[in-house]
Length: 429
Image 1 (cartoon, rainbow, N blue to C red):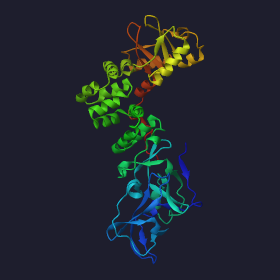
Image 2: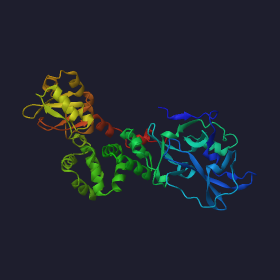
Image 3: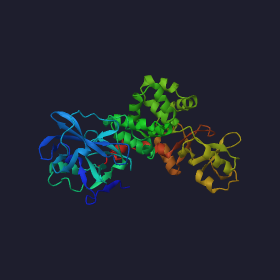
């Protein structure tokens, strides 16, 4: 999806932030009054924040000049309208953004596509008589504009830029209690996209994103599962044992076990003991396996049903199951003695007659792994039998200990830091 929008300066008057900051403020006669330090906009009330005033340095003091006192933004200067300047020092009000200080050269979130951008230029436009922030330019063009102001000046088209309505700043750069990354925007992204943002951001910026998704415990856990181990540990170290246990309790048991195994040794047992009993039991069991074997890879959550159950009942069990969706791609059937006798894909169940028994549509003696199999053996078996879900059986081939899904295998096969290496977390420009 193309998130960049061409701005047509023949339709509206465009103002580049760089063409105003550090420029002189002059009176009606053209005499210099001071120097423009920043532009102030009011955020959070509209998709395009309106310009409310300027920060101007006059006699070594930063003063506020309201936008109604600005007669015009002229090439190389700003013309003041009025007879006197209010000499009270500028004080930021809640909800205000200083465009140069808070945004320029800082990271911003581009929610269309879920990427970070660097604000190399801020674009304003005069709409119905009001100056508004309309876009951000992350390209290298603003650098040329500053180096060669005559050629790349105020009236030059800024090229392909990103609509401000899809942008959100980080509070770390904006000391204002009313500005927060909106959860409703983050919730529209996939957890993997949010994790990409966290990994590309600084620690403080990443903390803001995690705090924002914390409004939804399930989403927070999903995002945390998508983070690389380095970032997971970074955030766990900054939290108490109780906070870490709360987060791990919402994660899939296999992901929680992988993370606890990496936590500093003196914190492993305290965090583990704080997990809810069902989760704790599953995690303890998984920790007994080598993490790079089938036992270490498997999830203990899957669906195994009586072979006599009608297909309609099996589909209802899928709908009500709390197992991970990827594990529900295959359902297993057991006989009267709870021994596994077959497996069937969810697609095959949908295609089958609702009244026939589960056992009648399963594939007998499904391909399987054992807990001590290494990654290579798992990959060969899943590839040979075209499996997206592979059961891990006990030595007697009676009981399923867990299942390994194809995404678990891919995660281990991909090189460390693959998101960065392949540009998933690169800052967009």
